[in-house]
Image (cartoon, rainbow, N blue to C red; front, side):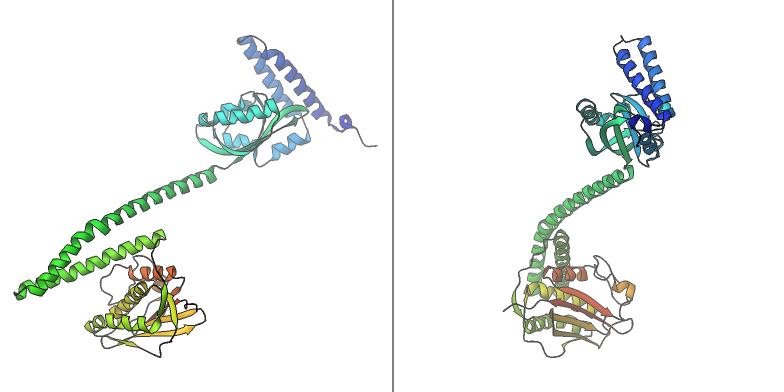
Length: 413
């Protein structure tokens, strides 16, 4: 015959339950006493009695809670009656310093209103509280974040509220740092956008006036020195205008607002226009710009101006590193996923550690003979190709040149 409930309780646990019950009944009487030394002494004696009961009991629940790796506290009404070693370690108190105190004594002042509602819901209405993060103050004054939940249930035979607490300080701190970093990044983006607005208007307007004046001087100046100076101004203002355009493109790429307006375009026409525009640059550097192979008679869906910008960046980069007298080759081929356009040079090639980063913003490889640059051209090229839903890449070997390529989708019939 199975033992009944009373028979199944170990003698030590039964004594502890009886002692708890007696202490709770006495506490009701003591709580009704007038405030003063007698009442305080009686409450202290009852706290000691509760502590002794906890230590003397041998109930299964108490043993389970004591061994829990998470913090556990038990309170009856507004008085703590139990705290396991895990919680004591987190808060830095001993058991004697915990028992008898109000559970809200350990809560951070700014979180006491919320914690008080949780305690009241459990004590008065018998409602469990789902996990939520509250701040607690350790004995040394430092603050920890605990994920707490409350469960009204008997503890050693007496109604109580069991509070489970998990230390999430590290997680909360990491989330706070992440939120702070995100806020800082958003502020930086706002500042960048404001700067780009200034750049696009307050710098470009006077720059356009400077270019127009320089063009007039080049056209009508009769003095050779004056014309030479005007040409220098014109070239410098052109470089500045291109730099401003690059900075605006970078801002648009990073914000996801790069504008492309795709229309059906013939591949051959785009390559011919690129070669015609860039051949003077190649000849000035002692290189030849040529087109190799038959151009596929297919149509791609692209923004013509933006694709010419990509070709300008890739070809300009190839010319920069091409040896004098060598050829920079453009070719186009049809692939299963679109049309592949490639720019090949016979330069020094790119080391693997540089090849992995050449499309990064402001990155400049350590190849010899590159000269000055902003490190934005390839980054912008990648952004433009990505805005078309295409792919861009690099094939290179040190000492054997480089091939930059991109693939764009064919236009649908």
